[in-house]
Amino acid sequence: MNRFKFSRLFATALLGWLAINAAVVSKADSSAPSTRKSPDWLRSAVVYEIFPRNFSQAGDFNAITARLDELQQLGVNVLWLMPIHPTGEKMKKGSLGSPFAVRDFYAINPAYGTTNDFKQLIAEAHQRGLKVVMDIVASHTSWDSVLMEHPEFYMKDTNGVIIPPEPGWTDVAGLDYSNPDVRAYMTGMMKYWLQEFGVDGFRCDVAPNVPVDFWEATRTELEKINPDVVILADAGAKPELLNKAFDVDSSWALINTLDSVMSSVEPAYYLKESWEHTYEQYPKGALHLRFTDNHEENRAVARYGVDGALATQVMMLTLDGVPLFYNGMEVGDATESADPALFEKMPVFWNSGGRPPLRDIYRDVIKLRKQNPAFYDGEVDWIQNTAPSEIVSYLRQDAKDEFLVLINLSSRRVTGSVELTNAAGFEVVNISGMPKPPVDTILPDFSLNGYGWHIYHRPSQ
Image (tube, rainbow, N blue to C red; front, side, top):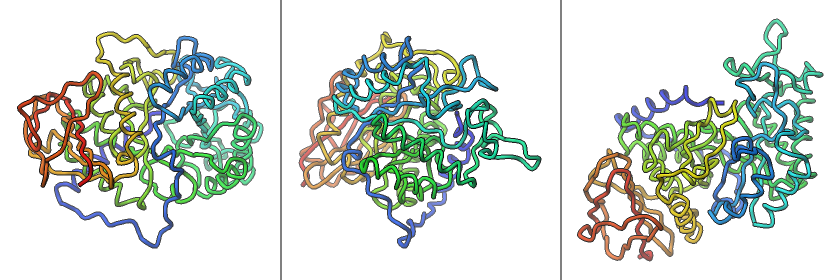
């Protein structure tokens, strides 16, 4: 469900107001609860979102299992499976319906395979050190859900008629969390998948539509089964979700700003404004999922072009937070996403021609990130440059290493310099398939082609 498009105009306007008026955003209330301590392995993780129906022509679990070696070699270590349950037929959208219109939370979509196929996928993933996270749609069901036997489970209007959780979501009916039986059912269902199938956690769709205290109580129950369960929130700008219930949320404000920058509506320095605004909202240590591509957006290569998609994903891989890949983006797949791909069969085209060696490039950047704690535990220090409308520049550093990242978010060649008190010792990091800086350009000066980028390294001084 492409639910966040509407909020973009507001988000962009807010960031513009912040930049123009140099507003000071108050820090998170120090008396508020701290964010929960996410596991160390998650801070260095890379998540890969899979839409099983469109991940392959077969559209089943076995086709995912067949590509686990490729995913492991890419460097991802968390597989997020979009909903695997049977999809509703009543009032469905498109010819196949949305996977987020769930008919039975305890069942598997027969088009995806059997329970044994799913268990085999999980077992094979675990053998390769990959964790498996299931998508849970706790906010609503399809109109022909097995839960319709309990009309008291659902939200109703003043006339007692069951309604969607949002007016535009016509293919689903909203669940009523004021009913304790709904809470017990949904908690029990999540415990079932954790206990019977050994999944490692959950990604929770539209988490803000469900009361925070439900998520907190459910997490307590899930930890009794698996103390290391990881839970991702489909949410942004709701810090209380990270207090006790969730390990990471989605950085929607950043991607909304990025879309405006890449369409030349806003200057590149608005990304720094957006990042700082989120940083001030949340307690220190909060984790955010960093992405340019997912099931709710048109593909990044369609929005930004191939080179732009690469440059922006490198940004997500080198900022703080947990980076995300989606369904074939490592080969530059341009197959439709969101509407209509959520409702139709539109498989990834794995042999995209005329692309740079994206898989090799991403593999090297992921490896760089994982091998250097400066990227996942270190500070982000945004530094000034002489072309702030086109270039983002920041340092990732810890006690051992400093990495300087320069990314051109425009389609034209840009030259300039970065404001470094001492540029000595920086050397460009070699990335497969990427050119080195011109030999006559030495930091603090730079020269970047359209959507060009470089990562530099030196030992911390």
